[in-house]
Amino acid sequence: MTYRTFKRLLGETSLERKCRFLFGGALMLLISGSFYFYAYLNLKVIQEQYRQRAQLLIGQNLLMNHWSRSIPSNDTESTLFVQQLSNELKPGNLRDFNWKFIHRDLQHAEPEKRPQTPFEHLAYEALFEKGAEFFVYEDKDDKKDQHAHFFERVIATESCLSCHRDQKMNPQIEEAGDVMAMARVSFELEGTQRDIAKNNAILLTMAMVTALLAMGASYVIVRYVVVKPVIHLKEVSDSIAHGDLDQRADIRTGDEFEELSHAFNRMLRHLVTTQDDLRLANTELDHKVDELAQANLSLHEMNQVKNDFLATMSHELRTPLNSILGFSDVLMAAENLNEKQHKYVGNIQASGQNLLSLINDILDLAKIEAGRMEIYLSDFPLPDLIERLTGTMKPLAEKKNIELRWDVERDLRIITQDVGKLQQILFNLLSNAVKFTPEGGRIHVSAYAVEDDMFDVVVADTGIGIPLEDQAVIFERFRQGKNLSGSDNLTREFEGTGLGLSIVKELCKLLKGEVQLESEFGKGSTFTVRLPQRLSLPTGSLTSLEIPMVKLRTGSTGAAVSGSTTSVEIDIPTSPD
Image (tube, rainbow, N blue to C red; front, side, top):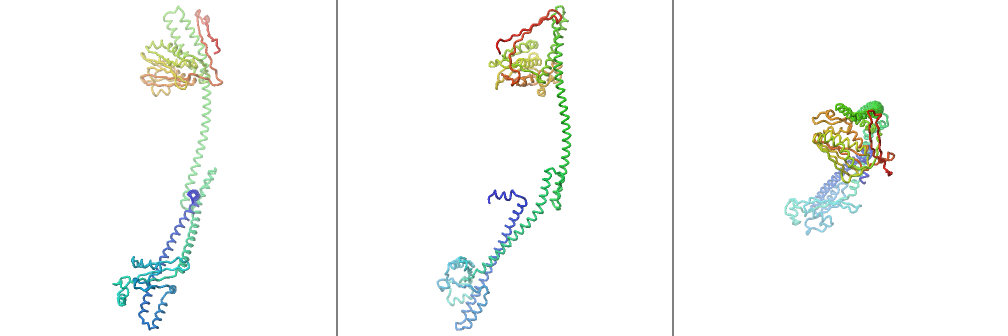
């Protein structure tokens, strides 16, 4: 039997079969071993009894032999009496045996009293040369004629010495206790072997019957004491698994299985209670999810309304604000204003420009959230754009004695991007750098190509920096960092709404790029904008187009706006590009 077969037979079968086979097999081995040992002991007893009978027969024959020799040869009546008495003293089942007397001195012994068969030579060597007390040889070569030969030593006594010395026999015997000869008694084993075989058959039959009865008893015990409660628990578990939660285990054996059934029922009741609680909690959670979905929908609608409102209001606010700025330009051009009036008009222009910038930021955010921000692609030189922006910010930097430098990698020249949005990104970063860099600081703008056909524009300053805890939220709306004193009143110290960096982040996403920040509080900040050099729009979107150069000229012929004249010049390229 292979290991796989044995494992499938016992390791992967039912508990009842395991107990029956394992217990029955172990019981069979124990009973067979015990009965075999018992048969072995019986055989030893029989062999010992044969030996004892052989010793008695040897003594009897020696006695009769000496007695018959002591009777005169002419006394026929005494000789017959001795022979008859010798035959009658033998046991009934041992009357037919062979008797032989073998001398130790083979030179002076008669031929019939010398070893003749091979087993007699073996017995002679064992008893006389090796000093054994007795020797047993069983002749089993012939199954029909089997014999057991028992050899025993004959020890000389004082009477033996006196007699044998007088007759000059066995000159090797010198004192009492010497071995003078050996005697052999042979028995037929046919009847004994038949009785032993019968006894072994009875023992084997009893062993098999006992093992079978024990296996039957173990089957009944395992079936009705162990397996039946387990099967009942399995049936209840299967019913519960199919949804019948009203099932309960009913085992009344008064043992551990009954306690197990009680524990199983307690667990089932707890399971039902827990399931009811979960069902109730799930129902409540469904109501909460519905309410949350409705609230989310309302928030989405309100956010849409807010975005529409901001877009509309921003657009509507720019119309009167443009009128205000236009009238302020007209007033600023008037020659009849004194210095104080010019100052007031300048304040009007500055406040108007700040308000217009705020409205434009809000409008851009509203367009981005509403998904209405369009991308207009064009091919333009990046160094020219950076030079123009730094030139625009240079007067503000020189007022604060800030060193403003820029450089662009030689290989990075013409790119395909939305020039207006890239300009807005860089303008917001540069304005923040100038705003938050103290006097005597430095601002450096650099651009270089990176892997995967991308390019980086880096704006680094030596300003106040951004604390580590604020760097995660600095790109959120209406957020500004802390000042050098650690307070949150940065808006009061520096003008701004906190929308610039959020617009930068959203525009970078719109242009398929990203913005990163590296800053240390009190030592400055470095903003890195990574964008693709060749931006392509998805299919169905607005195709890339070349934006013509627009020149706006405004002139006024009086104090009234209605009297002003505005001319627009558009340079349209002649090529299809």
